[in-house]
Length: 157
Image (tube, rainbow, N blue to C red; front, side):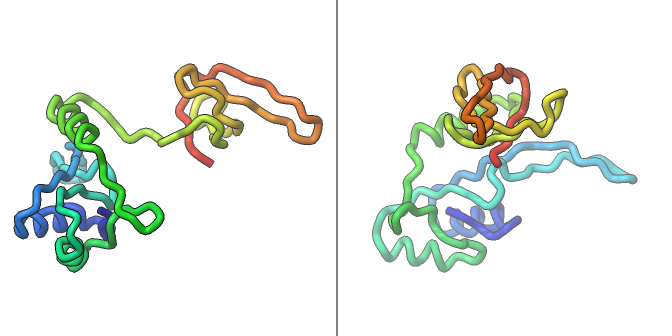
């Protein structure tokens, strides 16, 4: 479900209080201030938490009345369930405490921009995710050039 900004932990706690099975993926980061340093847990997916609930309309109404809940993630008006395998894989990954970070959700054919390095700001169309090939298209002359961009960070335009 989608939550208000910075309400992920509060919503998760409230739902647990209602007896729902929840999962809030968090990363532990070291934050530094002038006078101290502290390890802080921050939500992996800002504005989202997960809960397992039955499909009854009463359960959904109760969930939507929870303070801080914006709504369920839906497609064409229907809630979109997250496969249990994806949740268990995420739980397994986070339990290993391996260094990880968010990565842009890119699809082949989307317009992207290179961030950092000598190609910073270069825009094009992502041709292949596995090899990270970027196609720079010159529309006016209908020509294109493809380059390997392995090792560069990409962002969606």
